Structures are given as C-alpha cells and as structure tokens.
Amino acid sequence: MKIKMLIATIDNAYATLLSDNISERHANILEISVCSTLDGFSDMLKKQKFDVALIDAVFTKGIDKTAVQLPVLLWSENDAADFEIPADMEKMNKHQRISTMVATILEKYAKVSKNRIDSDIKDAAITAFWSPAGGVGKTSSALAYALSNVSADGIYQNSLSPRKDVFYLNLENFSSVPGFFDKAGKSISSVFEMLDTREGNIKMLIQGICCRDKGIMYLCGPENYVDMNILTSENITELVTSCAKLADELVIDLPCVCDTRTEKVFDLAGKVFIVTDQSASAGVKLMQFVTQNDVFDMIMEKTVLIVNKGAAIANHPVDNIISMPFIQSNDMVSVITKLSDNFYGAATEIYPNI
Image (cartoon, rainbow, N blue to C red; front, side):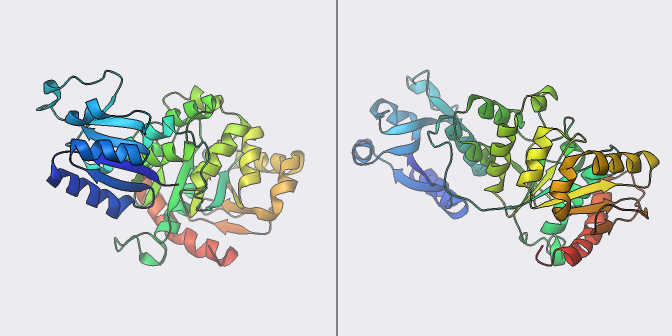
C-alpha cells in the first residue's frame, strides 16, 4: 500500500529537493505529487484524494479536509507568525533531515490510517531465541545471529548494502537494546498503545519509529517494564506479523519465561534457538523444560540448542547443536561481532539456505 502524498509549497527549489529525495529513497511506500500555486492546489484536491498533504501556511485556507486525510503544515520560525493556522492542524518543521520527516509522517499517518492491515508483505523468516535460565548469553546469541545475517560473506565489514533486511525484536521486560545499539529513538510503547486501542496501522507505525544501526532494524525499549506485561497473545501475533512484513529475517529475543505469549512466538517462528551454558542451574532448568513441558514436544523438530561459553553437554535433548566460544570482554559490541562470525558458519551447516 502506497501513501499518496501531496507537497504544496510556493518554494519550487524546496519542493524539488523534497520530492526528489523522497521519490528516490521511499518510492516503495510514498507516491508524491507536487503543487506550487493556490489555483493548482484547489484543482488537485477536486480531482484526487490524498492520504497526506504537506502544505505551506499560504495554502491552509484552501485546504479541503474531505480530500486530505492528514494535512500537515510545513512551517519555519520565519513565516509561521504571518498566518492564522488552524489550531488542530499537525505541524512539521520544514528545515530538518528528510529522513526524519518521512519517519514522522509515517508515524502520524499510521495513527489515523483506516487500513489496519495492508497487503505489502515481505514474508520474513522468523527466528526465536529463548532460554529457561538467565545469564546464559541468550541476547548475545540473538544479536550475533542477527548480525551474521547482515554481515554474511564480509558484506557488513566492507560497508556495502546488507545482504538481508534484518529486524531484531526485543521482547524482554528489561530491554537489552541500549547495550548494543548506539542510536536512540522512540519507544516501542507507542506500538503497544496502538495494539491496545486496535486503531491505526501497526506496520506503518513500526516502519516510522524503528531505528537502524549496524545494518539491523530495531525498536527501542519500552518506557516502563510494565508495558510489556500487558501484551496479550493476540497482541504478540499482530506485533510479530507486522514486523515480519518489513524484513527478510525477523529475530525475536524472548524473556526467560514460558507463558502463552512465548508459546505464541514459538508457534509463529520457523526456527527456535534454545540457549544454555555450562552452569549446573542452566542445565537443570533446561531439562525441566524438556521433561515437564509439552511445549518442547511441539517445537522439538525446529529447535537448535546453542551451547555458550565453550561448554560441552554430554546428554542433550535435541539433534542440532551449535557450540559458541567463550569470549571474555566487557565490550558487548565486540563480543557479538566475534560471535557472529562463528554463528554464520555453524548455522549454515544446519540451515543451508540461511
């Protein structure tokens, strides 16, 4: 689904810069029309309806709100005071990064969009990372796997385009995102709010607020850890499927519990990586999950065991095992980068088409 967007400004140079940049970088989601005169603006709104209109203040009196679902004022400190602007009109500073403008447009339009579900599906492979025990390196493994998909064959190291669009979705109560990604952004809590109200376009909101760092797309952590607890299994389904529409590979980092939401992710995932290490407590909890929980029987065929920190397990419950080396470092980024090199080769042996 493409968003039909009108740019109405008397500044032809600005209109050209904005429309050319958006058309070049975001043609997959935004369809751009441009207008530079009041008469032309009125005629265009009579002939066609637009999802979004970015308009100079001079055009606000001629806006037909039945023809534009989301009118947004393009303003600057120099001209905003010269016109009487409707108080309820969304505003956007015209002098900012165009990428930031596009992200804001997507976020704002997602909230008013009548299309809850759109048909543009990228159909990501979904991979879940889980462990019954904390501190075994689950998140490090999940991030290493995500990075390995981006940096396969040395592509990331050479600073070329990623081989895949990879989305990392952290569903832990206390997010690990700030420990690995440098770029901060808007909280995933706004997605939770839309899931709760069941209004707006979830995929579009995620596309608007997600960040990209080290070649990986991600959402920043919740504003409060309680936000994660209110999600239902139905919320999880919509969240996961919406993220999957934006990537080739969706990597989900789960909390160390096995509730109905975890089970829902297991069901949606094509691969499940269960992470453990050499500690006695981790081994005991893993065997309890295997022997006392029917869920394991349902996911056993798509499960791979990741044994972290150079450990060796004599009696293991699954056929496929990846052994990860012990890397001693306080630098999380360095650890994950080194693990990703090992991960890609090991995982390829199990999944040749990874």
